[in-house]
Image 1 (cartoon, rainbow, N blue to C red):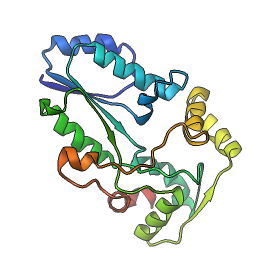
Image 2 (cartoon, helix red, strand yellow):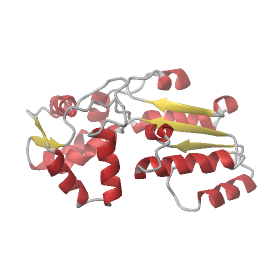
Image 3 (cartoon, rainbow, N blue to C red):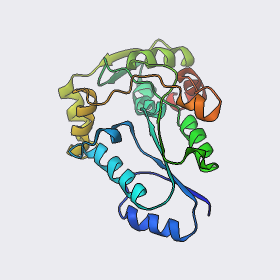
Length: 215
């Protein structure tokens, strides 16, 4: 084994990394997140990112960290609503995110896994556009050939809905990011192009490739 790609947040990360090192791996590429640079251990999402990065740093293995913005695939959360009608109700109507296609995260990861040129680097990754939720709904409607409408949820409604789906500490983390504004994922960054030599995929390209999920 020469290189390993890791997801963050798993228990016993130091032990796992020890096994990876014993197996002879030359480097590790860790998927992390933009909030890992905050140092905020009080935020449950940031905490597992920070702790995972710390474990990798302390493992003695050469490493590369990937810190992407929100995934375009998070849009699949709207699939049930769009299979039932033409209205998307979602939180944080005023929050712009330069969403990234996981395809591009994979392209950066594959590049870093195959070369020592990226060791010791933390790469902030984004897609090519900074979009509001309503912008994504509009583009998705154009791809689907439907007149879609976006309606923003109140924080109270969003918190109640999210609390039925995940532990309170993660609900609090996301409200800290997007209601309190502790995480800015709006910046369009050149990193994907700089690392891979290719342009990151647009949201329209992602929507065209995944349109069947919304029908």
